[in-house]
Image (tube, rainbow, N blue to C red; front, side, top):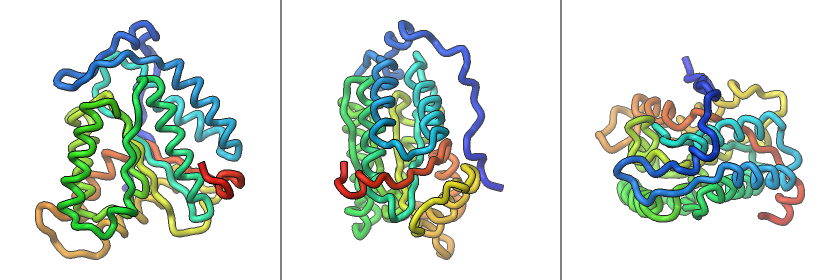
Length: 253
């Protein structure tokens, strides 16, 4: 059976903003940062006005999911989510992901790392894995605690195993970070009648087909069914749809 779309977690008893502002990066991480969750809330509200066609439920879940992490004085794991769309919403997906990442980083007064799966698609898998590791390490140690992995499904399969290190719940290398993945589905659009649970299964099946295919048993540094299952459980806490915004599709971000 599939992992549930959203792992149920308590969202009550959050520390107040004064406590949240005192939080520092987890032990061994640098640099320590002051967090201003109210900045994220303001920027998210502004983003909503720029993407008026998106479902209210999508904004609600994003807000709960990300504010919980921002308001935690000492996060026990990183926060991640997947945004997905059909072909007609390709630009909307890219721009909304970009805007959401910027909104989150505004609460930390930092910037965003962008990784483009399409540009790495034809490269050697081991090289891409090493490159992504170096990029994430430099970003999370520096002033970019937010990373957007655009078109995750386009990355060379074996290279995606690096996200075990960065998304492994309590064992993740960094906790005060946000990883946002985007996946472009092969159909024209995601129907409004598709439930979030069905959407998660749809994205799971598509990405698995891209990254695993029908390959036979593999080397330790290559993707297989078991490794994909483990990776998916670490990055699929929240999978949300993006629908086409006419203005964005015409003019871009």
